Image (cartoon, rainbow, N blue to C red):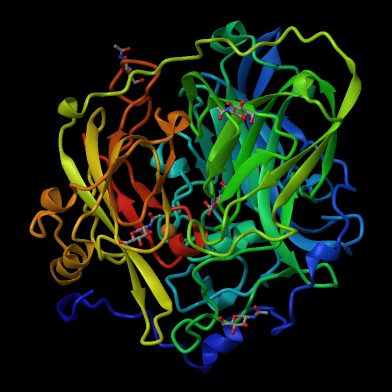
Length: 577
Ligand SMILES: *[C@@H]1O[C@H](CO)[C@@H](O)[C@H](O)[C@H]1NC(C)=O
Ligand SMILES: *[C@@H]1O[C@H](CO)[C@@H](O)[C@H](O)[C@H]1NC(C)=O
Ligand SMILES: *[C@@H]1O[C@H](CO)[C@@H](O)[C@H](O)[C@H]1NC(C)=O
Ligand SMILES: *[C@@H]1O[C@H](CO)[C@@H](O)[C@H](O)[C@H]1NC(C)=O
Ligand SMILES: *[C@@H]1O[C@H](CO)[C@@H](O)[C@H](O)[C@H]1NC(C)=O
Ligand SMILES: [Cu+2]
């Protein structure tokens, strides 16, 4: 930003904060994970928890208690057990990722999330970015966000609604223990993960992630997609680095250590983990499978493809079914995005298919993939033919897109990255504003707005909006980028800087499978991305939510590269009526 608007750096780091960087061994290098054999561990299925109860065959609401525990987890046959933080119904049942919660449309699920974590973190963190720090540093702040959930603010897992073990310390906006998930939105794939202020990246790295599916049998069964549990699988994918003793490696030195002793702009791990195992394998039949792939990496993008040429079919995005299936040979998944795909192994010419990754990191301009992170998992395809009565129908489910002309207003959302004199990123802000500054995005319930998202950084930032759903209209290259950027850095006002004149370059279409309503969209650098943002359900014409969306503490929207979100590419979002 220009001089007039230079934002205060967070607290200078005194000696104290060095001692706060908790429980951390100092710089030992990560091990070379490429030494680990690939495809030796069988792909686990995470435990399933039903978010409903059947009473005389009728589904009824259910209350669950899910804890967060410090446990040891085997990520690979040849790696010693790793200390992780894991979700589960009890310590002995806790897993990484956590149990998959299966809920039914219109049947309430209640979850009391309990923190049983010790007082010291297993990973380094950074007290100089805005961070939840409990009194006397006792306990690890956590709060659970259901990503993709359309639900009340009190249950949304607001970053400042954190709590420590036994709810001893609570963040400033903490309201209640038992979260309410009404599940009265469109069927689809969600995931839950930690969202504590300034700790999201490390709490997820430690293992606090899990899948959540909302099913709507009346609507979905007629589609005929693979649906038996054996053929409808959730894959939670993330990347991690390890030390030779099995512990998770995260660099404890920041890229600007005199400003932020630990924070780095992007975490990348070299081992690719699927459902808690590094490069696992799965034996499959020669038939169709549905895979709901959740990218739970901090910063790694994945470009998935099969080495034996098998294609796949997108049937859903990260929030909803697509209107019709989209056939592709590769797909790019940003952090926190979800791909809902069908793979038909019956046409495979070989008896093995390796799911591979070809995305540079950081994406799109970083290092090419290497031997280790270019492979994800292996499918071993049985030889014998089987009868497969599932299908991919020509039409899936259509949720109408609003027309831009019906939008009630336009907002400009600009992404800025700030650097130190050594040109290393120090922090990132949306609209040049710190998270604590007063709320500026106050959409009205039931409306659809146009958000013009302007990326002035060099990275692709996956934008995620709590409560709302977004649909990309167009992406327009900025012409005269340097002039526009210089103006924005001085004035921080897109209209004053003539955004319409600059947003006149080449237009690129959203990928076909990303044209519907979504939760996350990858915002291209140097472009203005025009999106519709809708604050109502998409499967019903009712413009009111079933809860009060105006309640405290409100919502947030943010970049879903967790290292950016933590420092602090996140802003409050307050719904009005
Ligand atoms: C950790 O980060 C620091 C600062 O960016 C860097 O100098 C160092 O090489 C990193 N360590 C490893 C093992 O990558
Ligand atoms: C996928 O690859 C196959 C074989 O290379 C090709 O025939 C097909 O057209 C490709 N499909 C798409 C959607 O690109
Ligand atoms: C996974 O999500 C992370 C963070 O949102 C993102 O940086 C990464 O590119 C994503 N990877 C894939 C394969 O989508
Ligand atoms: C964001 O914009 C910058 C320039 O303003 C560009 O260099 C960068 O590539 C953009 N990021 C993405 C993901 O398009
Ligand atoms: C819309 O939803 C609200 C909240 O659930 C409900 O009170 C209202 O009756 C609904 N309106 C219609 C027309 O269904
Ligand atoms: Cu970002």
